[in-house]
Length: 355
Image (cartoon, rainbow, N blue to C red; front, side, top):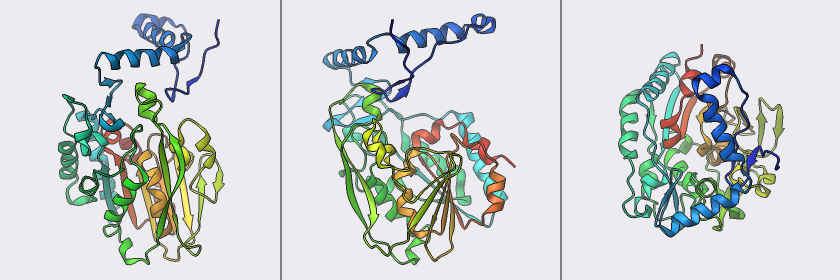
């Protein structure tokens, strides 16, 4: 009898564990649901079975598996998420209330479209997906003048024939983030600072991302990961404080992650509840960022321009936001999410509404 596994390296996710038996769980039916998930995740040979099933579906002409489209030119794309009306209203109301509590701080919103929205021509024939552009426009209208809208969709659409999204992963590439950063500099007031010239360096040529792991498609496809570093040795230096982990680093990159399955975690070692990035930048501007993982490859582009950037990921953050706001004197706040994550988010309002 094989030992239960905690995680599937192939699918890059935690596997269900054997549930505890309880009368309430049996009565509600939840125990049986959990047990079925457990049996499905833990049966011997699961990884092989997933590969066989994906191959059989492909032969049968199926082009969608687990919410992932098998597109043209080796592109895998997430199905566009449709926002829950109640959750979306709660988040947007919380964002507007947050602005009202801090009227003197400039607030920016960058809602990054996903690949299925920008690169529709790569979707498989007859693929049906919701309009993400319409949902993004609605958020812009709801926030109104209270937020400075940074139009990532327009910028990425202008470069949609370039490698701005990974083929096998749900993230944008560092190139996509670079173009968005160039488009955001004026609105963030960074065009008034001395330009810090950056250069892209390949740190991997063997990346195979989460969408491949989730769907079983393109498992042998390898692609590069690039990072941007200042060209000059005189550029501001950074120090990163991983607050909850009580760990500090002189780099925004974790090269050890390049030896693991999820190489995108090379940026900051993955996601963290709160990080504090300080630099030797002489200008004393401070920025607060609320984000998801799309920001991880964007933050290194921002860091040299600010004296300090505090980064909060609402999916993991459990601290008191009011304490952070009182301790720091922020000049700007940036909300940076990919659209799918934002439209499925249920944590942002709880973080923002805390007093």
